[in-house]
Amino acid sequence: MKKLPVNQKMAKTALKAKPASLSKSTMMQVMSPLDANHYGYVHGGAIMRYVDEAAFVSASRHARRNVVTASMDHFDFIHPVHLGDLLILKSSVNYVGETSMEIGVRIESEDTVKGEVQFIGRAYVTMVALDDLGRPTPVPPLILETPLDKNRAKRAKERRTFRLKHRRGEKNGRKSS
Image (tube, rainbow, N blue to C red):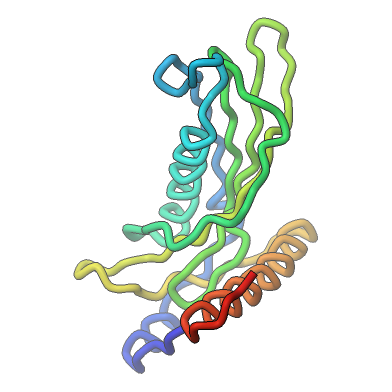
């Protein structure tokens, strides 16, 4: 990751830290025919779009800036989501770097007739805060309030290290797996 210019480093230290709880969000969306494939299941791409929107909400609440998606980590779809189900996305900021944040998104679906809730999967989205000129800009530090917050931050830092190694490998022309 690029080092910040001195003026941005000073801006980072001037930012007031924010608690992890401030970024928590729950988003719900009824799955409509526009989200479904010809089998009556929801397209994985539609779910990924909603994951991205949920991550945007949490990242924006933390940074109070425009944010963009830098990456979305691998995730598996454990169960299908059906047409008419309620998609439930629970998101929060797990880790904050200089200009980027990792947002964890838990994906569930609810059959609103039966009241059954199923775990669908989880995703980790890296969002970058932008200044008014569209350049990466510092984000406030994250206050880890609970043991769960601390554990999420620890695992997020490990994923970040892996992502950076992976990206460097691709940039250097080496094949990374």
